Length: 222
Length: 116
Image 1: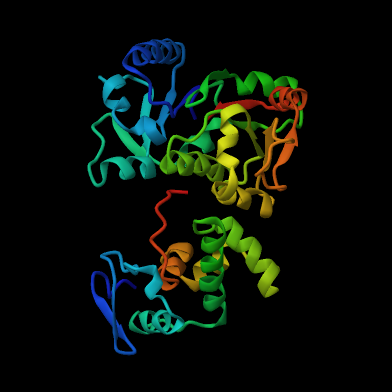
Image 2: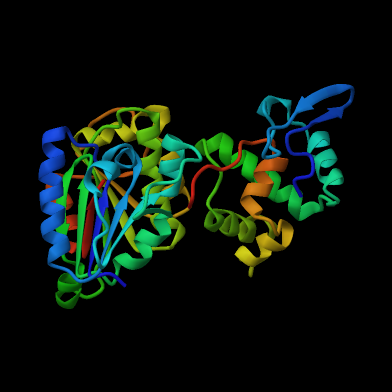
């Protein structure tokens, strides 16, 4: 059980690494037990840049699949260790605070506080507002959603802005399985009048998107 | 069940290369006869249910560009085979070493790379 969880998927510029380290440091100091989970592009050089010394009460983990894609059989340096997305999701419900440092921005969620006030709300919203830079990034973003689906979490996916690029043409086919098999609700903000989107994704306007965010107990910016 | 890892198989006079993990190097080499021969060498009989899973995994890969989640395969098994109480355990009975991964191998698909 962790008080604090950080999901890091961004690959920040050198200047932003300092900013991210500062934000992360402050959060880790404020919590007794923490999980920092690097996924996707963040499993490149970022762990080496921000994990300099072991910190009591903090587990540093990299997504195994993301890591192997970039580093092959090389093991991460201690205190960083490999884990799966299941590790991340299994602990998320019990955390007091969940920060996401995503490709589409940073967000701080306080799921426990929200859960006390809102009953029967979907606990997890995966928000995608950044276009995939390449096929690997496209795939790894989808894998986060599939991880939530595999664990049968009550989760929704909201695409907006440049994130709608994930749903264009043939590239959307991986996402189609979420709706074809009823695994997760997939919503696309502002897609109603754009060509090339499958009917499987529910088009929503800005107001509905705000409602989706407001009803979520945890938001992860991917 | 990986006794042909890193080797090749000869099917109908054609040599087919396998990677170190026992998966086909070229998925286009796949035939049902090849799957049968791989299973025979593993000491495994491809019963109807195993064939169902192999074909389902191939179809899912063609449709979505990746193998199915276990959850999806279970859902499809209930729907398509009439086994109403199908579960992940049912799939593990078919391929104890990992149903989706093993079905991918016999289906001529790459080893699933995702940890989910």
